[in-house]
Length: 68
Length: 251
Image 1: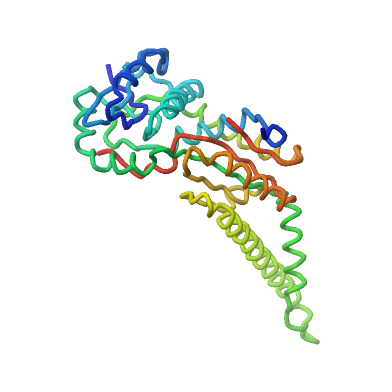
Image 2: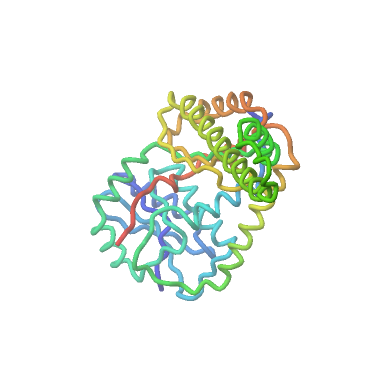
């Protein structure tokens, strides 16, 4: 119905998903601390993608609604 | 084996339904999903070996995928990634200890979902406009006739004053937009959380919690706002499980 304003921006959605799943939600205190070998990679990925959102913002024009 | 918790669900009398759904799903690394239940709520869990969990993008997305699928069928509280416990018994204990708070949060998000709205602007253009306004409104004291050597300080202060007023004008502008959004959305009666100026171009970042059947109304409103603010770019995401609206720390 709103196809003209829906931008299927997968990258933005991934950033949004990672932001939520890593930073939001119910917190469990006293949980096991896991060795997270690649945790830096996750955050590097998020930062890179956030940059690309900003860059994309400058490149793209017109309105958009991102749908997952 | 440890237990990774994905979400806590309001299951009530639908345990059989949850069982059937879990049979058709997999958790991180293809692990089977199970439930740990207590008094009408269930924690969805999978086994995971300590030290084997890698917090990379694909695992985080797989984790989010489980929550997303469950949220389409049940009211739930999403857990933050890496929520691990040692055993089923320890999960039951923590559910028991926090039962009231869990039930309260589940009631708060029942039949609701989250949406995100990011508002971007051409920050350079907007700041330039604010600066122009600020310059026009800034009246500095007249130059002393003989103390030209102080002009460098005066210029510095003028520059700082203009910068400060530009920022004030920008924030006032952002507040006005927030007020406008709030007014437009009032008919949907959402719970919302606003953040201002999260990045140079992202001037507003807002999350809403509203009833699932109001999605189309929300899209209409965002579309209207976009038409109203042609110089801004509005990006709506969702529906999401209520990640931003669970105020609970399990102890």
